[in-house]
Length: 375
Image: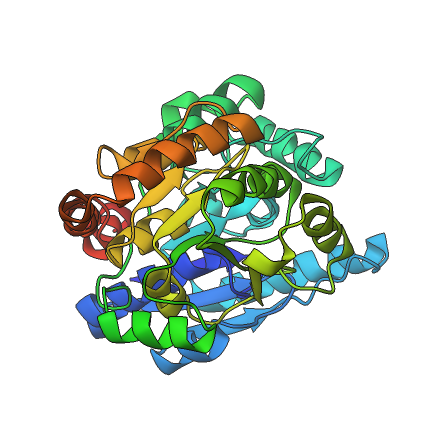
């Protein structure tokens, strides 16, 4: 079987990571019976060497936003030629821009096309105008171009079918899968992580993992933390992700205003979050919008409980093995954290929760389960 994946890039991100895990599993399971090619629209990036190592062919259209319109048509022609050479049985596209590109795929009658949507919703407050326009165009073409449309959360299905007019009849729900071999509990990693940042064993460490963006609701998170800090002297917040650093003036200004600079650590973007998940006590996710937040499942696999809003399918992932709040304003977050931190003090209950959190992801969100669904 010949499979061509089309994705914006192979940089470090949720969709890109999921594509890598899918390719890795299927190459291992089906070996020579499956040939996988990836075409990126913009560039390659973090996952490129990892994918090449397992035998995946990679090409890039190297589209530049500054390029003129005539160059776009050249890229479309390059895309068509690349697809023709691979003679795919299946084309699977990831996210709106790549879904849109599948409109230009050759020999559609001989190839099954699957779209993949990773957002739970789009709106002008948190999304680019061009992304919204492309999604609406895809909604129009969804009746004819794809054989199926794969979503990773129920909220994503509801939004795109109702608001952007995607074909309801072609809907498929496949949750992301996470690797229990890559994410696991380690007391040694915990000790070393805390030593590195001079944090005591008895200190309470909250963690945030994600990029700096409006939809992540970071200002409310930091304001809530400033309230919690007044009650707990031995509490810290460690933040990892793109633009989570002191160069980010918007971020540092909020920290100064809330007078919490002595309790915050910025780790910036990390290649691997295993040490981070093991080093913290509780992962926080208070986003306005998510689809399938991978960090929630990864943290739970490391036996680190999660405190989250109802963003995307976070409630589905966490279930009763963590903490879910309905509202995500700073006062609601602070109230929820106070209740959660009281629970944390009960060592027996907390240790049971840590064990149960890992088991839930192993059972419900394994890579094998996800890969079999795609296949």
